[in-house]
Length: 417
Image 1 (cartoon, helix red, strand yellow):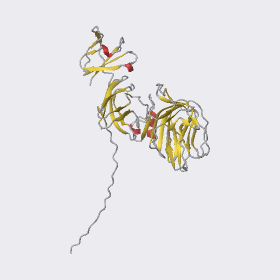
Image 2 (tube, helix red, strand yellow):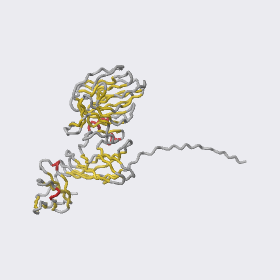
Image 3 (cartoon, helix red, strand yellow):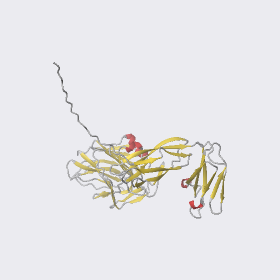
Image 4 (cartoon, one colour):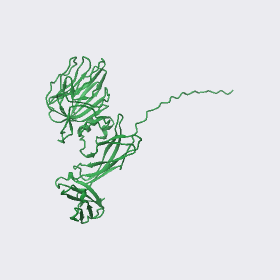
């Protein structure tokens, strides 16, 4: 007799969430710059919305090692917009001032009286980090670390949200020229979990890491203080910068970044070393694209410190929104060797009587093409504009391309590749 054994197998079907997809594409890839030491180069990056609905975009220069945990980024360059979510915030007062590099309209200022700014509420809890540059303009009362039930008066750069529950609290930051404190907040509860007294005058870089219910403070890339552990099981990151009922911050804030994880030492160093737009200047930095449309974004490589060689870098294209999607944009920078002749031995300019200029020069040995630039001041090459390129030894420049009655200087650069 044959016996049959029947096996019944129950299969559980698990539907995994799909990774968010972007409708934004770009070209060329990679974006290639050609320059010589001490000079710059400009290119266009074409951004296209291939989707069926309008999309907002931004271009970031943040280090790739930080992007995976980045939730919000406020560069405060001529505005108050989060370059990931496109959140412009609720503003009460505030103004834009000079940043740490003395660039105008590149940092947010608070008057210390009633200015504040409500950023995107990321709803982060228990494991998060905040990094920023700040320049406080006055001292504040410093309070010893401890668990307190009374209200704490201080200069609140980040006002701590209030929670009625006995298990929840909001995390806040108080900053003055004489120190920084982490002060949390709930009903009849306002502990000072971290109190660091030091001379913090001028611009400094700060990272607050909250992990294991304990805050840690890094100043200019160095761990300077680890605070008390919070007795509450849930600590939320607050979102109102500038202060509220128990005090307001007076000073400047710049390059505010919010992360959904405790940053590592390597990430903290990358954050400290990062200077937005130091290597690339982008115009426009962000924008809106209707379905099926494209735009050309001007990207200028302005890092004149690079010596001869080939460098790899990256920008990041962000499809902005409540669930932003980022795409890396590879960049190659070719910096030529200055020991090779890169400029013609002579340059002649003739005019046709209507103001149109004809540039002519002697050929450079082995040159494959020439690029032509013009600008108003020979002592400021950063203001020169790219006019075009040619494989010949002459170039025509139309008069209507310049402002009326303007005086122009021309530069011709030979390329050997």
